[in-house]
Length: 489
Ligand SMILES: Cc1cc2nc3c(=O)[nH]c(=O)nc-3n(C[C@H](O)[C@H](O)[C@H](O)COP(=O)(O)OP(=O)(O)OC[C@H]3O[C@@H](n4cnc5c(N)ncnc54)[C@H](O)[C@@H]3O)c2cc1C
Image 1 (cartoon, rainbow, N blue to C red):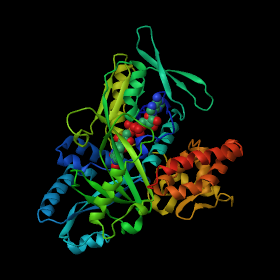
Image 2 (cartoon, rainbow, N blue to C red):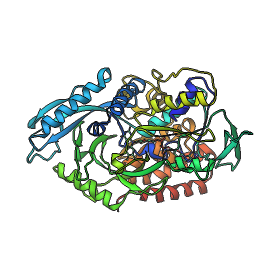
Image 3 (spheres, rainbow, N blue to C red):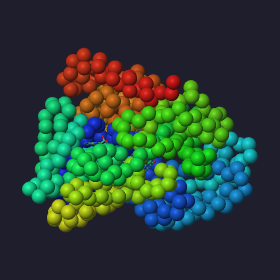
Image 4 (cartoon, rainbow, N blue to C red):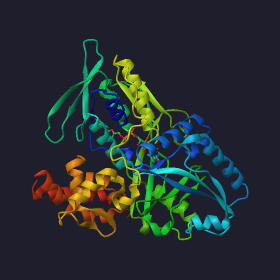
């Protein structure tokens, strides 16, 4: 999606085909941080941290309705932690330079507990507070799709690329794709084809060359979602070293507390990865050690898993670089993969620069450094639960003039019928899942509540899309079967 925005903003003619819905893959399943990556600093990857910190600043500048600052506290239970993490986080501030989000600071025990009232006080010596960014990943993706469309790109969901077109010399000069709704086969000629399919990168490369050497390895990360009573206040908890040598976050997000993540090597790609029992136990156990009220399985409102598209290398998946890679196959197919959500803009710029050379395209300069993302609005916080829509909030409020649309879909979540209708009319939602998982984040926040919302949403969608009650009933069934996987039994 970043490549589509970049290329369209440079003035190129762009088509994007997505096999499922926009954001169905990893991009809706992240920890929701726009960050330089304190962990990568510890690994000594200074250039990745600097580039990510710069991108963090640009993203907040270009999408203030979607990215905001978040304070993180690293609690200290040993004497050496305050100087160690204090100095490390000062370096983090320094590397951010003019893109800084706020200076880190040592906290005494009292200040630490004031910021994190749910933190285990026994043995606590103090803490270090630092600042990073937070966002709604699937919502940003939808707004990037709208930004690309605003610049003339054609985007289609539920339309997998099935193969490639070739010129007389065997070079790729387009894709074939199948519209899953009409079953129509499409031929899309192109000067350059970019494969930006995350953990599916090798699968798509093999449509071009069945013997292509794999580039990717996959590792899974899961999150657990609880209600906010487990993490009172507006500050996130950062556990700098878990028993498997990683970091664990417990962060406030959309009125809930999200804890994660894990790093479990898995075989091959999947669109709907499932959290493993050991991963759930690991997060419950680790978070429980730091919270006065340790969460149990019954407290989990939702769990979601995502797959990291990692580029092959030596050692454990947690030690593999998060730098991005641009790979050009013999046929001229360009694949872009690796990287982080935070660095998507820079990755896209780099990729389109390569595409220009390869496709002998006019040398148009990148235009995304200061490009406002769809819905751009300062002070969007005053929009309340509609904040993430930015300037679109006004039109959504307009829909609520119809009393049928001015209804909340579930008492535990802020979403209204008007947002479901907006998602279909303006944001290309086609199914109940598209609405409840990615246009709203109900499935990721509270799977049981999302199941209750499925029927009213299916009826609204059926009316908008001209479908009958059988379609609506089938949608509810499909969605509820999926939502069961987001619950911890
Ligand atoms: C657990 C976890 C936590 C993370 N947390 C963070 C974080 O806090 N901050 C951060 O910056 N980064 C984070 N990341 C990294 C970030 O989420 C990923 O780097 C990023 O989302 C990858 O995006 P992508 O577009 O490459 O892949 P995806 O989002 O997976 O997109 C690939 C898309 O390709 C589509 N596709 C597949 N095959 C085809 C085909 N044949 N035709 C058309 N389309 C196809 C898929 O349907 C999919 O939608 C995290 C990752 C994980 C796993």
